[in-house]
Length: 302
Length: 331
Image (cartoon, rainbow over all chains, first blue to last red; front, side, top):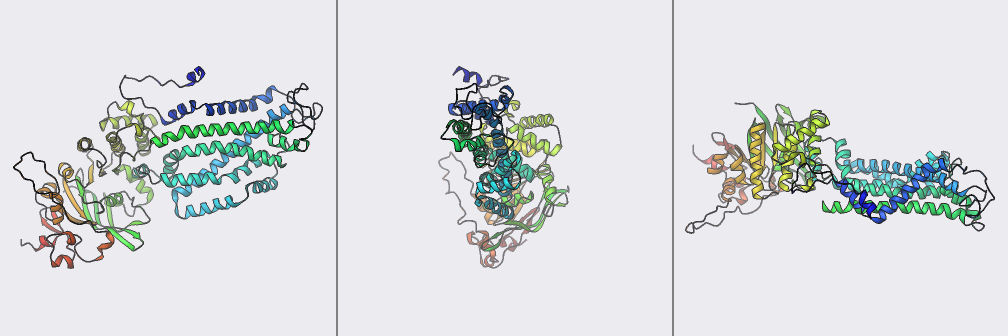
């Protein structure tokens, strides 16, 4: 408890003592709510540990992840390699640490791409309406009806399975939900009085879209963005499991896929990276839910 | 005579509806001189607000459009101006204060940021200059401890405060014309009085011409120099405010003025029942008949009223009314 208390930002002292409550920005209110949410803070901690391990781990733990270092299929704790080895005698811990980098990078990159495409298309469609809306929504529907996994597989196979291409493939199959949500928010907010008021003092379209409406549409979009990191990681794991991974990089999904045929000989090869994926996605969901709770009450209060 | 700042000529605004194109404002002409306060009065739905929006080039299109006429701001036609030019005019030359202070401020920015942002967009000033300006404006509109209030968010301010902020935003670029569309309808009476005091004050300080749109005759009497009465999209009477209150010519105006309740503590002063104008404003689509739009509700209507719509004719020095009774009068 005391740890959390010290993390609370201390409000700056007022210039003059007065009865009027101090101005608390909505952003700070949100963070205060978030700090008070145990599950969300737990998720954030797990996530930070995973991210830091992925960044620093490969520098500290220098066992090469793709070389045979011990007897194949060694269970954890029976050698100097803490988590044992896989079917080729590769160190599972090294794989986990190095794979985390790849998995998380792809997860974030794909999520950023998802949000960029989705928000842009949704914002333009919702703001301009009319034929712009119709056209963009037809495009969105086209992408929605494509089977996601199949389409991503085709993209990856067409343009060699590099990390960049995998992230792009995941991005372009998963932006549709974000686009629809953004559009709905824009349709709602563009009718607000303050948008009319901004227009009446000379705001142009780009200012209205990016500086006026988007910040007001941000809360649900932030949550969707956070959750889409989780689904991108799962998507990458799925693709790797099917063998569509960068042959030069280790990722968690690929570890699961590689070790699958040997699951009866050693359950660890599949379980350990699987657990890592599960933990990461869980942590991201917790953070996403926490953001949701922290942001929404204020929306109601408005 | 001073050069007219704003001149509206034969303005007609149409809306496309399922039943075809409907004119919500027709044959509207008026002038606005530098530093003048013009009141536009009328019931809900008579075309006041859409006229105000048309002055900013903000008639929602589709379905609406300015189908005829010119709006000249210092000789420049707003109706045909490009969107880019309109953006410069809005805020710089003409700005507007809306009816709803509760919802007209952007909830995600502090009020200081909102004023400063407007100042920055128009003056190309630096961030800190704009912030200074914002605080100055807050001070000007009578917000106490503006340095601190500037950091507050709209939801932390009362309705009256928010309307002051709205006025600050509208005035930060020192427009030549300020349109106030029922600026106090959403506020309670005491705050209303404060806001109007503020308007009058600012008008002296900044010298902007004000178009005050309202349905409150009391406000008109207090605030304006000249009044236009609109009914069903037309101007039916125009004149100086004193004449409007004491000697209304059009039966509709007479009705409006008589609608004001009076307070009396004298028990012997047996008040008459409050006057009301029977009926409602006709919907714009009912106006295709060539009769006086007010005739169905007018107690003085006679045969001619149902046959021909009366033109707006001068009835006295600086006054005009659209009523057959006035034109029939000898002299």
